[in-house]
Image 1 (cartoon, rainbow, N blue to C red):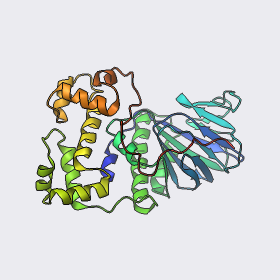
Image 2 (cartoon, helix red, strand yellow):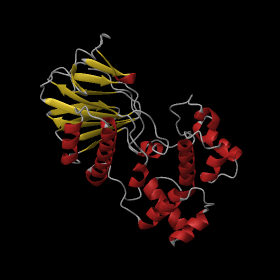
Image 3 (cartoon, rainbow, N blue to C red):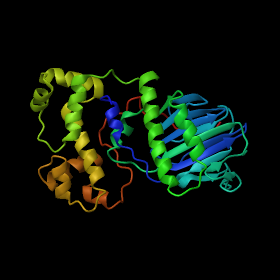
Image 4 (cartoon, helix red, strand yellow):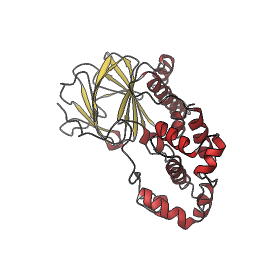
Length: 326
């Protein structure tokens, strides 16, 4: 896995929301569920998506990834008026607020205006932010399309999504993870947002930092380990990651710390030691500077959407105004 794709090691779906959407034209759904990451795969027919970065035409086999909580619209055509709204908690309603959960229920994990409709989509949603996965979320544009990334995997998901069997949610979680990785691999290989070409020195540096965030890294030490100069390493590292080695290390340490804080069996001192901070106090100061809250408050679960303070805009551009129903 190359240096850029190394950030994708974070997401692990747990009780993910998966739904097969079956529609006949005209149809349009406004999605305002505030999910951090959603995949929409076209199983049959087609669709278009109006996202924060434009309109995307989707054909059979394509997968749309939507990052962050900005709303978007799925429809048979851009001009179709909104017929349903998906809100927080996956609540389905009409534009007038009428509950559509039951009227459009078409079977196990299946929903839509026509059970035999020609347009069939698979929607998979990651319900929460895995904190190491934050590096992935910050690396992605608000929306991207992977063109036909893995027909066999989509076929398997198509078969499994409507199965009601023991441990089925776990099966679907793992399949959703595989679809995410396949889509990102296809996008970085073929898409307009292609990642920078692999750089062996940067890959090695990233591997060292990720494997041992607790080590007392300096730019000199990292340059020696990768067999290059400080200036060359800094330039090459920035070309691939968009930041410096030491800034990346800080991001990685704090992201790992946020993930570790969900384990209440670990003391703050233990977390600090695992990510290279000399004391709980120094970790707390850095954590609050970056995330805007203390580790203790974060651990209490009162903050569910902590963002990187002062981080540059994600690759792919800043958010644009939210799409409006047409």
